[in-house]
Image 1 (cartoon, rainbow, N blue to C red):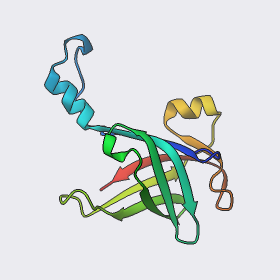
Image 2: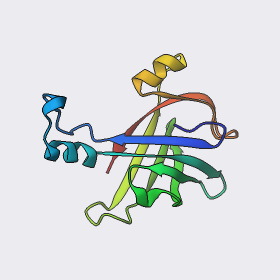
Image 3: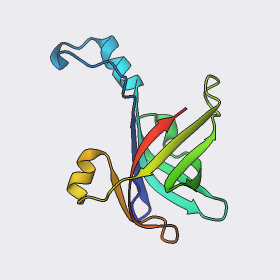
Length: 139
């Protein structure tokens, strides 16, 4: 979720993480597996339209090594989709990563936030206005 004031927050979850049958009786191993399938970071962002990248500047993150880093995300637009994609630099098992933001019908903010769709009133200002997007991650 990126806001017009230059702040963003991203939460990524593996949809195939094992489900807990009883949260009160969860094992340490199950908790570790759940945490391993989740990642989040929040902070400022900057956009360079000419270079076609978005840079996230995490101020908080589930991975302490992300805090204070510069996360550059090349972007493009394809068939009404916002595509973030690049060569993977930290995981030898993954050659390339790609996150696809798809336009969905806009709904009131309260409904959109519950459904996982995000409304951007104007992000970035010169690229598009009042669009709603939902994401899927592809490796």
